[in-house]
Image (cartoon, rainbow, N blue to C red; front, top):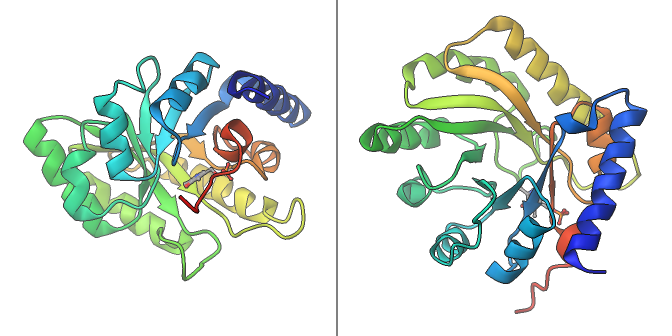
Amino acid sequence: MSIAENIAHIRAQMNAAAIEAGRDPKEILLCAATKMNDGENVRQAIAGGVDCCGENRVQELTKKLSENAYDGAPVHFIGHLQTNKVKQVVGKVDLIQSVDSLRLLNAIQEQAAKQNIVQKILLEINVGGEESKSGFCVGEIYEICEKMTNFPNIRVEGLMTVPPICQIPGENRKFFQEIYQLSVDITTKKYDNVCVKILSMGMSDDFRDAIACGSTMVRIGTAIFGARDYSK
Ligand SMILES: *Cc1c(COP(=O)(O)O)cnc(C)c1O
């Protein structure tokens, strides 16, 4: 199947999952996770109607930006971002989804202030508490949101999570529900510079479960582009 056909198929499944959950399908955006895909594949995904692209690595982002590969769709950063590479990302992407430490927040603030812009971000949550993953703990988030008043050049637009790899279908629903509840709690508290609009959760294997639990953005790689070849 072509990239466009894959996207049409995913959209149909997204819409069905939304309707089943009593939600409006228009509430849920499709982000193409473009890592290891070249500019041509990115262009095909945009032509196929994805709402945005998500890039994991700074080097790939910079290369594809220089090729104008993302023309026609917003680009997001979704990978672990080192503070020494912040300059190559702040102001270059619409949204940094993967903000995972106070140190990174400080670096983004400094860079965004220099550029005189407000950088939109999501706070990444390590919902499974996995050693191998970055992200804030669930319990840490309130404290971080309180601190956002000190970051005038950053706007928190929501939460992002990558749950543990799923062994049994539906197993991750408890994590998605936990993040949804957290987003409701944060909204109630009305923190400065925090306005939860986006819940970025769900990937190729579990996006229907994520939509059932309140996701407003799914990040899909494999189901759009096919399996990634890590041998290259
Ligand atoms: C690769 C990646 C995805 C997409 O994963 P698939 O299983 O290929 O759909 C989503 N989010 C992040 C942060 C990723 O790195």
